[in-house]
Image (cartoon, rainbow, N blue to C red; front, side):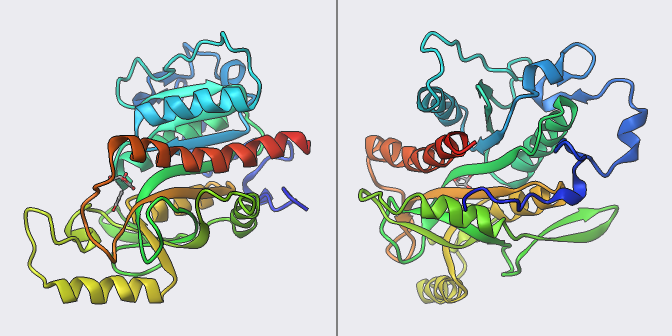
Length: 308
Ligand code: R2B
Ligand code: URA
């Protein structure tokens, strides 16, 4: 059955609200969610966000506004509903709420994404939201699949080909496993079986800390390897079961897992990296393709509420 009881209960209170593994938070009189421009003193966070069931993050402010609009129509919310940027006081990210769906931009790369994600996790904790499911919807380069395909990530790989997110903590490298919720990914993928316009895959995703050399590109300002070095590396990735390269998946997987959250990553490929490095499709084509992860998640979220 869809949406089974795979919620990781360990880190939840019996009612599904998030229990965070940080005693220090209890001694804070006020918690300032600085990058979201919110705090626990001046905002009624439970009233504002307590009903959130899906937290969807993606790179750009514009796309996450489009996603919120799209979800409002999918869920049949009133057309006159105003979409306010709820983080406008920080000017850092953008966050919109369409009923039970929160749509948040996270910028490019792991440091930016991890900052937004950690504050949104605290936001969901303070909101007492029950069993929220987290998704990242994004763009990426594909490996051996047609441009415009959608990849649902099974796991994230770091730049040195380990399934971990590595971050220095107190001067030592901390390594966190980066697997995504297998059931959830399969459920999302299963719902795409009738989509004829594009292919959808479940596969590994490499997250690089750089768009150019970090992704074996030849077209950055620097390149100190040959084309055959590049191709050998991309083939190694493909042989490991990687079908796309972006810049956040491993950290998104690891951080949501540490919080005991179910989460998934759904990205559209803008090019096949076995064919080239430059992103050449027209702006219009790219805009259309960016809607594909939205359609996939829109189906999943709609189905979730139908079956409740
Ligand atoms: C995909 O696209 C962005 C870089 O263009 C980055 O955020 C990512 O993961
Ligand atoms: N985003 C990436 O990180 N890489 C690509 O090749 C395309 C989009």
